[in-house]
Length: 259
Image (cartoon, rainbow, N blue to C red; front, side, top):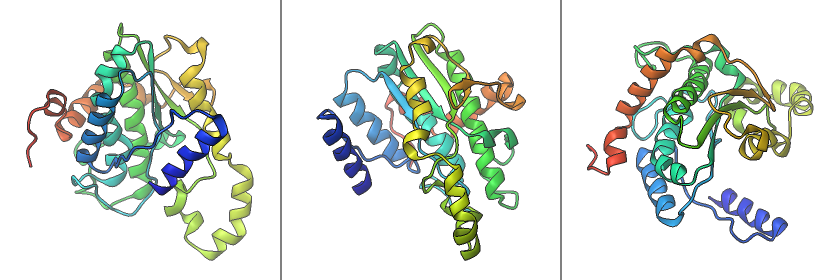
């Protein structure tokens, strides 16, 4: 929250816009997501833009507060629940837009419905990341289908590789050789956070994208995603399984959730 509050202060200072606030949200906690969504719907009459930007990349075999494999839990399930909890407000605010941050890595992903949480297989941190990012595109496709006629659009985006701490768990940061020899070359090739954020901003505000939904963008350009990402049957199956895992129906109805 210290970094989040500092960023909000910087934005307020640079833009002289005092309507910039920071809120706590832990995407590895369904309880935190429900609390955040309840606060937003209570405080805000309108939500015109939702950018699901957070991610975990190639971390050890950790689990979320609710027992989900961390990358699948944060990158997909957390955003899945958050978006659904805000849908009524987004619909009431139409035209509104949802942007889901995926990755080029989704092309190497595969949805293993027999073991989404990596409880049966030897954990593969790269494969788990790719699966989570494939799930983001599939979620986008199915959500777009469900939102037809509502005035709410949703698109998936690979923003490019950014100079952030996302790769803290990758090999680039695991040895002195990688850090000091390959590190400088890597930093020269990747985008600054400001540049990496521009495709998200473009999808959020570009007039020419009004009504465009269910698409995958690589930077500023629409591109076809991996074949599995366009499989409607897989997308619908993932939606049903995700809804079951996060108790979506109970969450949306506000009924007591099982402990």
